[in-house]
View: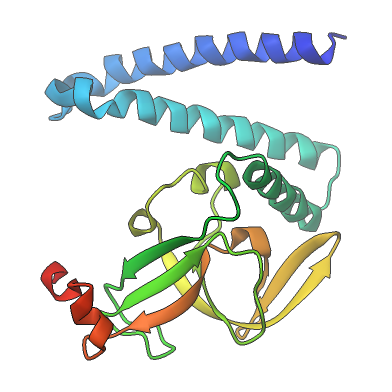
Length: 211
């Protein structure tokens, strides 16, 4: 059995090969008839799509192995959450910097949030309390791929109210008012303020020009 370094080197070489094969397959079967083909040197859609497909296959392989060795489904969520937490903690962004996102709502979300309102969201917050309103993905995608997204506008988001915060299997969870239990690391952010058209800040930020 190869050692850790040898295994990782083998995997790196296999990843390189299969990534190149995916790019070639896309070119042969799909890209030649794509209307964006002439802009590929600027959009890199083929390279991005191959990266996404390979990443999904990689994570599916991990999940398949964990199921084969009889890891319970409830524990898979814990493992995925701890993976995301480690990815965030080893990142290059300082946790001292507060990252705020301004998200325009295209439809009503409940909690007196209506189409045209803006949400001021504290992204990556570590402290959540009962009574907070949080933003979560509508469905839980593969952790690594979802958290690589850079813009909230690309994500299928939904607003939930927080009923309580608790720990389970060493992972911090929130329970929503709907009864869902979600690992804290899956929370996109906490809503700091709902900005409406009649609010003074709406005009000060020139949000009316975005409509």
